[in-house]
Image (tube, rainbow, N blue to C red):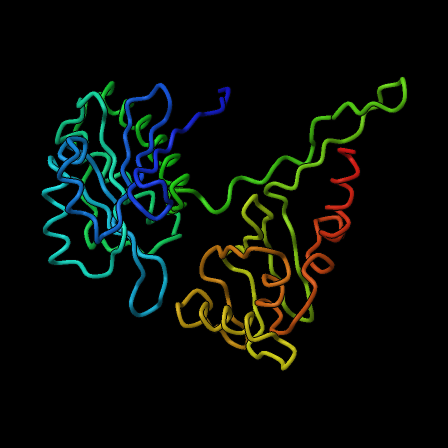
Length: 309
């Protein structure tokens, strides 16, 4: 199926990025509102906030300092938020989603809530504060498909508003056989392989450690099951050391025998912190992460730049 670009409109009510924000996908019925906790009372003046919808409460976990989210639904979102102000302390931002044409019912929003919790638990980007996942409400096939389409716009808008909790960290690796890109060379057209760094499979083998990763548009994702050194060395920078200790404290790195094992896919901004977390000392990621043929990431990136010149 063809994928088309989307236009998103964001309105900053106060002219600042920290205030109340309205978001919508052009030519779609979805409406979102992002609001700081301290200004939740102001939502009472907006009819959109009093419609049936789903909402996300964002904050940080007190014990791990991880990003944390609570996902809920209500027939009147504003009324439900009043109880959360009294009963939930962790959150400092709410983002709600409703329909501009007011065609969402209780069954619709319960379906959306259940699916959103399911997705957030699968992506594992945020700690999910929901203790129980509600069962999917029974919807006719046409309504169910309409809500699945609505979900795609929720994922789009909530990402634009700064939260990627509904996005998979890794995707299926690209096929090895890439299409060819026509490159002009003087008056002649020549064919050269079209290189893609998105979801490129990478490997790191140092001493008795083996790790596998994917390069994505967000950074380097070290995959679940990869190995990491038990001990660290003095050359490991304080920043990398703190990052590694956080992974251990959160249970993302679990000691098995004389090695740590990654318990889930972990996203790093760049290649070097990912490599250093694995080996336990400062190391160049671009030189040590290699593809299946043994070509270093640094060389792959250089070839990528050359191919588009």
